[in-house]
Length: 487
Ligand code: FUL
Image (cartoon, rainbow, N blue to C red; front, side, top):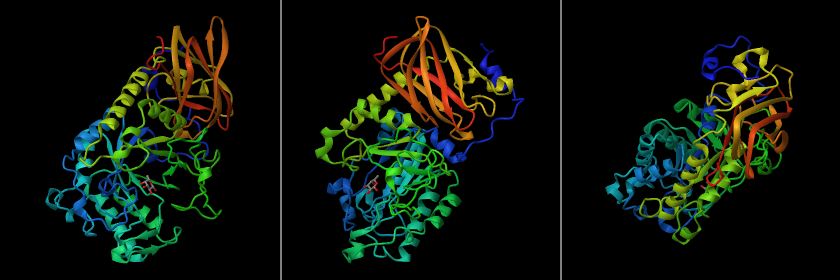
């Protein structure tokens, strides 16, 4: 069953209503976030100069001297690797602010760098815009410098800092709250240990409301969302499967909050969870989050980054890859080289969908309405999809390449605005007159990449939905060859 040209069909309005959403569904800001796939983290502050991972909060602002700082060079290297956003540590646990905040002296204003006029937040935000990356902010809740940390006064400071960041630098796509909370610090000279109640101290609901008011399109990340969840490890690896829905509980079984979550459940999420709370996989290109000279030889290779891509993005999560600027204020040559070859790998592999010319057919079509036909699996559009009638939980779609095609990667995407409906699929290949099973996976969601152990050649491919919780609605069935696969 071959249907007519996709462009014509895509323009045709549906006669039959789309499927009713199943279970948790994404918000429009979450949908936009899913499209980003990979974003970069920039860990940069006084730690870069003190060789630490966690600064105590007593650093001399003059230590921050990135003499050759070049936001454009940093962001263009990220863009070349296919990164679609950059999140900057505007303030890490040491409390040092990379913008001239009115809230504290522990900032660039007090540094002799650029005569106290430097603003790393502005420079990165502007460079991101120039290179068409989204800009995001990391603002550590724990502040080891601030004298008021531990009292309500500090919460007002934190919200003021957030307000400055969310009103002074244009659109922000993601606000990142880490879960490291309280402990030893300088605290305005007190040099003591301050512990806070993670569940109540920060008043998160009010802070998140502030973000909603100031940047309604921004997603908010923390261990527990409310928009994006931490994947539960810092290795960049999502669960297999990694369900988008999740109902986090606290480590002790009570209500969850940033810094207090049963993180063993975060990689997989919950199949029938009540909230759409997709996972973000944060990982550093180096062993540490900040730049250290001694780690220059331990930068992850492009092949390792590609593996991480399949283990995060390939399971429906996003990859947040940290690439820390060095003391010059640039990315080191080792990091740039890995980014560049990772970008080349991505372009060479995903630049050409071998299924784009294939004929797509399916065992079922919703309401017999071509608006839901199988050809939408290969039309390269984000808004169209193949769907079947309500109650149909097992269905097949077949791609006929019309010739032998060699590939090693299959990409599937559900039309997630209708929820995560499919539980399990299998893929078979047609070759020499019969179907042979090729792969089977649990969970698709925003994206599922199946990377085969070795390239295979087939004239046809068949996708079998073998288990679903609601009638399947699939946006894409794409096929790619990695560099080195014979074509
Ligand atoms: C953690 C922090 O303690 C690390 O320094 C780093 O910023 C990481 C991304 O989040 O909570």
